[in-house]
Image 1 (cartoon, rainbow, N blue to C red):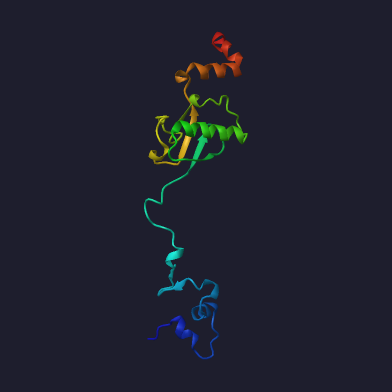
Image 2: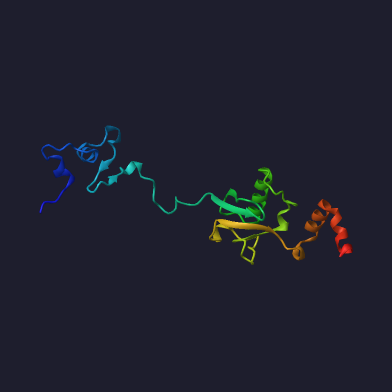
Length: 172
């Protein structure tokens, strides 16, 4: 039995070489002369072009986080330092949401009126003092705190926006 290898098929009389056969026989272009081919088609990169692999120099400097705000259509992308806290992320996500004029508009922009969760199905909110690098996720869900846990400043801000809500208890 004869095995068909691309090199043998090039030398067959009366056969026109294919593009694949030509690629095997042609040397690499001169512009890539610093790169050398190794057996099996792998390319080795000279030492001066390789990035440093030491653990100390490969530290995270920025994180790209996705924060979905309740009732919004898409996540807000926040680039922040891994040393920042959950409270900082809430503040930055709200600022970006307002700056981009996303819909629906948020009723208040006080970060203390919001809490951050891992997902919209998570009942436990994240602690505002926890560092982002320790969370283990890059996707979060931001929602307003329940009415019972709102502090007086959030309640007053909501009442100033919608003064007619003071009469809702009277109507019920």
